[in-house]
Image (cartoon, rainbow, N blue to C red; front, side, top):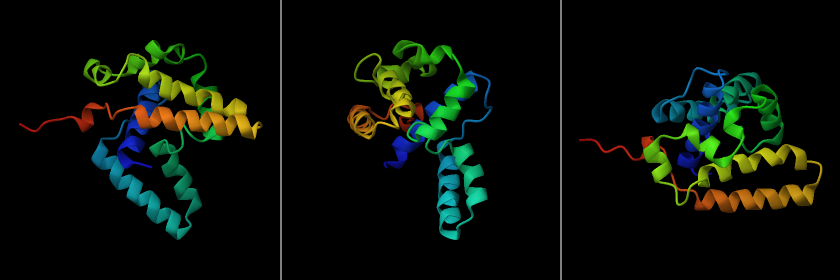
Length: 152
């Protein structure tokens, strides 16, 4: 997976959790990258307990792992940001929304993952949903301000 896309997914999960009062932290890209390297070390060393704790912090698999997403949805309940594509995009800054190819694109991508937990017992439908999400992901630009800062 593209590390920038992975970070963007992390930020969107974090913004959602922060908005719902379930987290206080959104790591800057540099800190996320360092912790991601640490995660790779833990995998090589087989340190599973430490890996699990770090995965929670990095929101690793938040959108793509149906079991993690199912648990997150239990915590999120009826979060208003999950109500519609437009509501979800309320988590974006105006300049980030402007970088999307069309209104609702980010919401379409991220909210599209919400169907995965219910499809896990239907392998064909699950695989089709993953293909749709992959296509949406390929079309979704890197929209975060962190990727578009100009040093001046």
